[in-house]
Structure formats: structure tokens, C-alpha cells
Image (cartoon, rainbow, N blue to C red; front, side, top):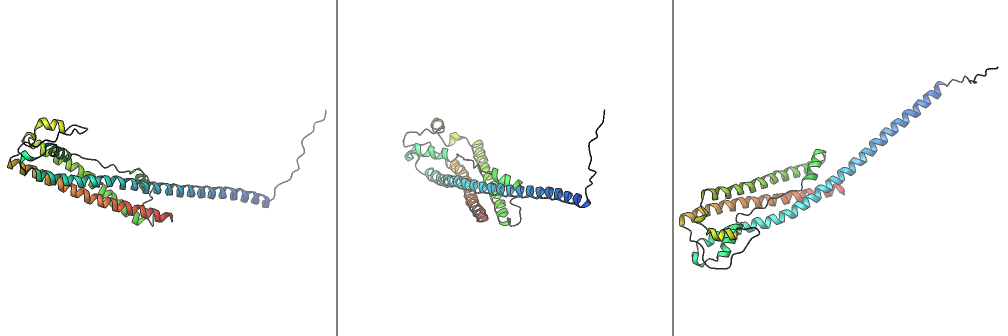
Length: 244
């Protein structure tokens, strides 16, 4: 029986062939690396664009919500002025529905809930701190400052109300039977009827002190609303400019 062995050509690759193969492999890996980097760069640019657009849209939502708060705060200042006027009138000639509605509306609060998710994400990704974004970063910083002040001021106003009614007996100002009706939620209007409980001069001054505080807190809120809308609009314009 004959044994046959496979034939080997015995050909050895030349150094030039090995170098060429190595170069081709190196080139393929390098190009793949660059292609991946380019892909990631494009993806990050698109992500940045989408996130900043979300920031602009969230500022627009905040702007609209602030319009509501502006009307509410402005009306609250007018309410304080109206109460201040009515307590000097003859109590027998004051409409009880108007008076009790004003008193209850003077202690109403609305909390501002900013749409901040996109800003938090952008800040975490460092979009605001990138070179060339100094104006936007400054704008966001100012917005956050006034946002914190606005929220803190609203909480301080609520504390002001609590302290006033903790140290002042409501019976000195209101008929508690009528207050239990007028203070319901949703609101229940009392019938139009002339005559409210007389308030002593001493209690009038205490009530005026409370009203002065409410006015001051709401004046500060108006200032913060003005500032928030200014910086929100400025940020929207800066982001829009980046897209052009």
C-alpha cells in the first residue's frame, strides 16, 4: 500500500507582501476607528441639537405658565387694595359675598412648576459650558437664580399667612359660619347681602399689616416673573441663533 502525502508548494511570503497585508489591516482598523468616531460625533451633534430644541420649547412652556402667574399675582395685589378699602367702609353697607370672596382669594397660592428636565440634561452633558456658549450659560444661570427666588418667595408668603392666622383669632374679623361656607373648595359664593361683622380699629391695623406683607411678596413675585420671562426669551433666541 502506498502512502501519499499532500504536496506543499513551499512558497514563503515575501516581506513586501507581509508589509502590504499589515498595512491593509492597519488601514482597515484605522478607518473603522475614524468612521466610528465620526458616527459618534454626528450622533452627539444631533443629540445636542434635539436637547437644546427641547430646552427652547420648555422655556416657551414656562413663559406661557408665567403669563398665568403674572395675572394671578397682579390680581392678588388688587385684592389687598380692595380689602384695605372695604374695612374702612360702614360694615353694614359692605356686600358679604364680595368681602368673603376677597378674603379667601387673598390666601390662595399657585406653585410655579418649571419645565426643567431638558435644562438638567443639557447641563449634565456640558452643553451650556461649551466654548461659544457663554451667553447662553449666563442666561441659564440668571434664570435659575430668579426661579429659586420666585419659589422661595411664594413659600415665604404662605408662611406669612400662617403666622398671621396663628396669632390672630379669625373671629375678630369674620363671621365663622359664613367663612365655613365661603372657604369651601370648589368655591361656594355667599348670597349678595349687605352687612359684615364689624372689625375693631386695632384688628384693622393688624389686618393691614398682613395685607402690606402680601403686597410686598407679590411685588417681588412680579419682579421675578419679569426676570424669568426676560431670560427665557433671551435663551430661546440664543438657541435659535445656533440653528441658523
